[in-house]
Amino acid sequence: MPDHLHHIATLFLLIALFISSCSVFETREAEEPEDGTGTPFIQPEQPSQVVENLINAVENMNVQNYHRLITEQGFLFEPSSDARNSDPELWSNWGYDEERDYFSNLSSSASGLSGHQLQLENESSSQDSDTEFQYEADYTVTFVHDRGSDVAPTVAEGHMILYMERSEDDLWEIVEWYDFSEGSNFTWSDFRSTFIQ
Image (cartoon, rainbow, N blue to C red; front, side, top):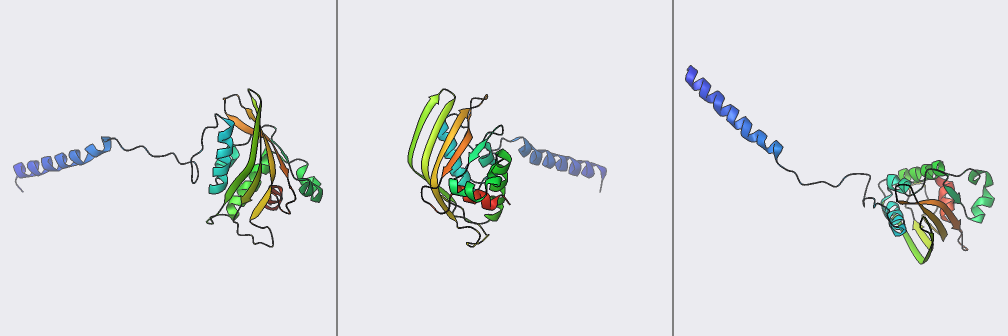
C-alpha cells in the first residue's frame, strides 16, 4: 500500500475510534443503589418509617435492612412467656448479635422462596418524649422456609411492643422489642429460637 493511502487509512481509523469513544462521556441515567433485595431502605426520620422498613424487610427477607432497624448498643428482646419458660438460658443474653444471626439464618432458609409477609392490626402508639416512642400491634408474620413444618410452621401470631429512640444522627431505631403470645401456640419468639442455629 502506498504511503499516502496508509496514512489516510490510519487517519480514518483514528477518527472512527475517537467518535466511538465519545459515548464514554455521555450522561447515563441514574441507577437505584443496591443494598439488598426488594424495596429500598427508607431513612427512618419518623417512627412510622421504622415500622414500614420492618414490613418491607420481612417481605423481601432483606437481612441488611432488618439489621439497620435495631440499635447495636444495648438492644433488648423480651420473648413471649412460653418461649422464655421453654428455654430460659437462650434468652438470658439475647441482644443485637443474636437478633442478627437468627434473621440471617432464617433468610438463608427462605432463599428462593416467596410469600413472606408481616400483617399488623390494632396498632397504637405514644410519643413519650422528643426522643422516645412506643408502638404496639397484633401481628401475623409469615416466613416461608425450607426446614419443613415438623421443625417450624410458616406463620406466627402474637402481640408486640416496640420501644424506639431517636439516635444521635436524628434517625429512629428499635431499642427494645417485647413479644406476647396472646394465646398463640407459635410466636415470633419461636421463629427466633428455631433459627438461631
